[in-house]
Image 1: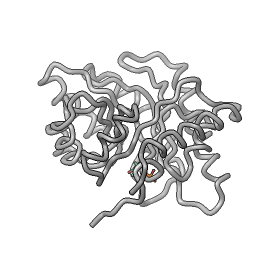
Image 2: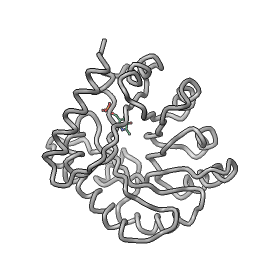
Image 3: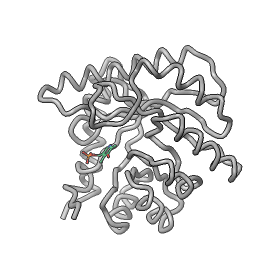
Image 4: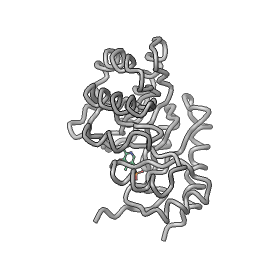
Length: 230
Ligand SMILES: *Cc1c(COP(=O)(O)O)cnc(C)c1O
């Protein structure tokens, strides 16, 4: 059985070292523990070790865990289908995976109905992998112009998933590109929009992500151990 407290401490130590090394690293970095497939008991072990923010990639699983622990910060990191939005609103701190105007409009509608403002990140597919969702970088500015006109959404930043590559340096170029896109968008004034967050880096590549300026890391297996999807 994994010792979750020890794993979190080890990850935090590597984050601090990468932060020290990186020329572009952020001052404040939030570690999100990706708890998909893990039961609430293991999540509570992480809470006992001081971890308060968790990432899930399925709405149903997030909502079930929220019902157990509504005080924790639940982030939706996986692809979000429009027809699931109604179950999610009011239960998530941050949606990392906004990738279409249709989805934005549904989040707007459901948030308005509950008189809430929902925090979102725009997901980009920098490496243009066919298997991954997310906007292409050329679409970002127009997309933000439109999304930021929706008063019940707040755009808090950008997210990407590192590509599957042999060379870690290829991942680095994707992460540094996301940072550059974020820096460019920060120059543009829009309502309901402060895209300062950069969600990038998972168990295999979070140190590179920290060096390249990530300020939210999505780390699962390095904390909870290998997942069993059965
Ligand atoms: C599962 C998942 C993670 C965490 O992956 P690990 O390799 O276990 O750290 C991060 N981001 C997304 C979008 C995921 O689905």
